[in-house]
Image (cartoon, rainbow, N blue to C red; front, side, top):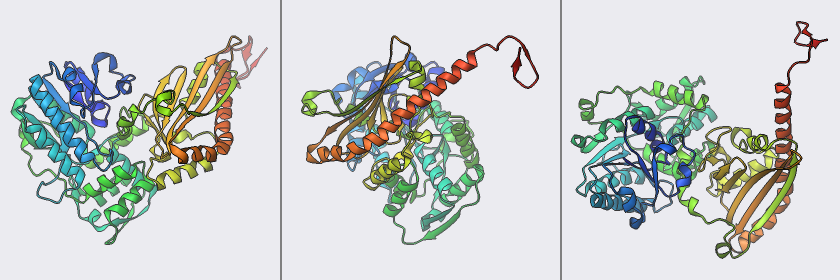
Length: 503
């Protein structure tokens, strides 16, 4: 099996069932390091390549029986449709040359005769381009995917939990959707992989068909929230709706816009022919929402919509490359000694961001988020996948993890900047048993605007970055002291029944 899109939301979850079924799995990745910390990494083969670069594909496609196509370019910019066409064409050509037996493609529901959104229209076109070659293509079309960490679920969750009263377009009350649980998507994919008799286009969905207003109320019920007041108005355009979604949910404006445009189309299963081949009963809406919320509460979020969101920018060169940066790397470096072992220090470092915040000066971080939201950046609401664990490619609010190890964490800034920025921490154990914690903020400016930006933010570094490092030291020392105390044996004597020991 060759999985295209293993760093994405569905792809990252499909690997385990493929392996459990006894398949040999290979993944194509533009940035193989993004898969380094996945629990199944040592059981698969990873080949570096890019679907937009045909010469990088033959090695990955050689000897492959089935290709699972799970890539999309939503969020890649205004030309995402052209990027998707190129990826589909190159995949079809490489699969033909390699003698692949089958391509399985996950697409989007929607009546082709409707005025589909650019996103849904592109999804269907990718299917046609893949099927243009001689390799049989099985295309599964699904609507809203409900699962912990999915873009649709996080948009739904953000809207309902933040807004007890919603002003919405009228179509929210009338447009219908057939959501499907992520586990049902995986089950359908596994059922058609390797079956050449499933070549063609199939529609999959959950057990219930609901309006978007009903879906919002279903989330409120499952989450134990009061019924939401939904007020439809005729003047709320998709553009205004996407700006509102961007404001109150973790989704950035470009993804929110495409999702909102897609919500105007009825996306339901019209042809249930696949059920005659696959004996599987999908979950209903509330069961799917309950499963997703339970996974969120249990921190069972193996993949997230943002996992592959900024994959292309992972190719940005390092700021230590003098030819690329022109030799100018602006730095703010701070070192402090911590009376705690390196592991205790890194435990605090890798917990920054998300619900835990950025350790002080929350008002300044909120101001930076507001500015970033206004200019179309991700903002702090993107959060993080897990409160303490990080892997390469994870989103951490305004940043993405570029490198993580027992002694180093490097985050690359994804906020809108006139340049490229990184925030890094390194720990080193000293001979006296203390740990040296080095905190680096690096910035490579673009033009005069970049240099002026750095001059403007330098005064705030003393406040924000200085406070952050101080808090990291205090928390690491407190955690280390608590751990040492817990490991001490009780003094000799007897308990007096109150929990205190007396001689």
